[in-house]
Length: 299
Image 1 (tube, rainbow, N blue to C red):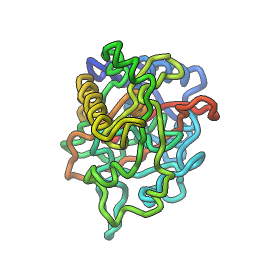
Image 2 (image 1 turned 90 degrees about the horizontal axis):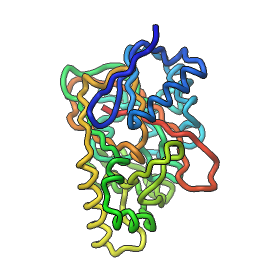
Image 3 (image 1 turned 30 degrees about the vertical axis):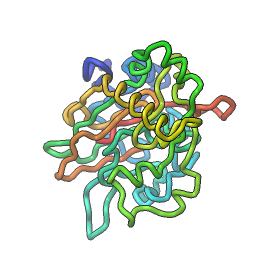
Image 4 (image 1 turned 135 degrees about the vertical axis):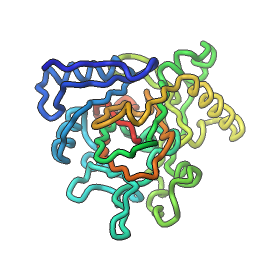
């Protein structure tokens, strides 16, 4: 049966049915990847049945993975699936007093791992248990946010870089407690500088690359001026939101990182929820070894 695509919302995103992610030949995968780019970097693949090994194998087709080519920060390594260094568990379940994954992951606007020199290009999130209610997610189209900027602002941003630091979310998001944090996470390895505006390596589209979750400051600006500019860009990005309900994202989701699509969990459920996430790497700066881009929605 030929697979079908239908839009998730008016701004970005599409749902795919009639496709088995674990059994795609090269031609079908190329078509899927093209559809992913054509729909703003957010795809939902419905009715998937993936073991951890199959999920990782599918993710590798997008590029090298965190946990293999690079390592997660220490504070979240405890949530990796045993025996699967690239599979990160997102869950609010607790069994015998032990958390089965990272609860409240993504409860703030962010781009996955933007605080690394090679941030996440993509995440693939596989839903194992879904709540009856809650789990809605907001996405922001950062390409459209950039396109809507005045010419003078685009010219200004072309010269600017920003510091991304894990410490921003760790200290201000309210989703980490002291017991989860480790001193090694703040020794400089989770801090990076990236352009404020970047270019998609395949589509050529320009996008904003700042996010309240991890962006600490604009390089070369006074603290007050930096905060003012980041707040202005954040407000402009909010004009390009897409609200995707829990019902709209099920099974496996593939979503570009906040470089081109931003995300924030809108409503967490108190019911049990479990997901497996895989992140692939991406190079923003010229001269680094190539890596492909692709990501998921953390509900």
